[in-house]
Amino acid sequence: MNIWCRPIDGIFINRANIYTDRESGDSMIRNGKVADLFADHGILGLYAIENDNNAFRALHKDNSLKEDAFCLKRLNNYESKLMASGLKITNFAVTFRQVQMVVTYTGAGLKMVALTRPAVDMEKVKAVLESMASSLRVSEPAARREEAGGSDEVAAFLPEEKDAIIKAVVRIMGPIGTMIVNDAEKRLHQKENAGNRSVEALIRIIRDDIGEPELIDRLDRLLKKLEFAA
Amino acid sequence: MSFFINILDIVKIPGIRQYLLIKEEGQVVSHNISRPETVAPQLKLAGLGCRELVPEKFYGGFRYMILEQESDDPLVLFKLGTCFLGVWSDRTVRTAVMIKEVMRFLAEITSSGRDKKDAV
Image 1 (cartoon, each protein chain N blue to C red):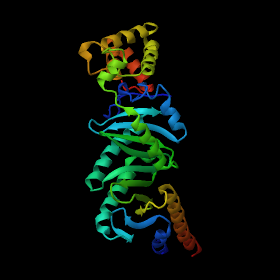
Image 2: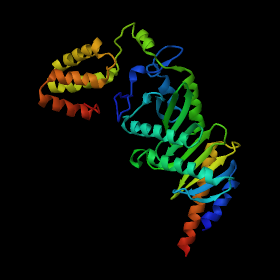
Image 3: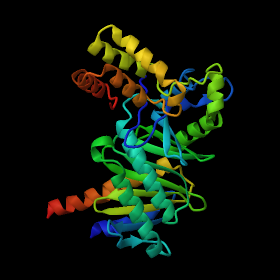
Image 4: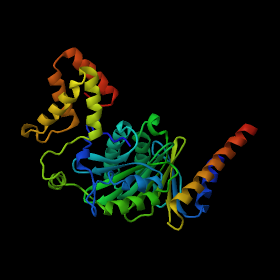
């Protein structure tokens, strides 16, 4: 399962704030609950969206988020227009030829958007989302620090993303590439970078370290192929 | 013309209480609701918005939308050529079942119209 985390079209996907299971305290993805839950219900992907900051979080998705991010951004505008027209929406689903979007409001300013196969019954999806929402909690920064063993150093990107970046840098710089990325990550976690520990910030530091315009250009192209905006 | 006559039969589908058929521009074509002029702009907004929500190349074209509201019965909106059809379900039938029936009904009445044209 590939999960990507990067800003697309102005929407910030922050996977560091991954939702956790209220009982076990474990990541819903890490403990496999999400995947298990969805396999039987034709759910292809799930996003949790916080209305206040327009941020959404991918809880589970097999493919690139690029198309979904575009659509979710439009979805927010669309909802606002519907509400302004006087419709008091509680839930809704839009079905396209290939995908269905089911939108459920779970309270506390959080809504969940499930992408399903078109034929899936909205009622069933809603039931799954509602049962899931009751076992989720948003990881607040303090809780995340606690989960990370009291450390302030909570990465705002995923290990698999770091691995992909290492591969790209090693291709450009040779074996020293791993050291460059690790060193950049260390500096990313220094105090002056607090609040900006995104994968883009990491890439910026790496680019500065490489310095050579030609090499940076090659790295940018490689990262673009890996779908990391450089 | 037969399509617009046949559409009246939509209320015979179990679970459907009311319907409103409008053109994309918002003009009311056929209905059995009390205040179509109030609802038509909302239907137009919902329909046009849905169509523009996702480019066709991403998920394919828009087919229908289910809208659940606080107090009212659920509204299901279908795209029908250059028109939008809104139907209100009375919750006696599962929405998914009702949608299947409506789609079958619409396919029937649109194909019967085409058949007649072909015969001429």
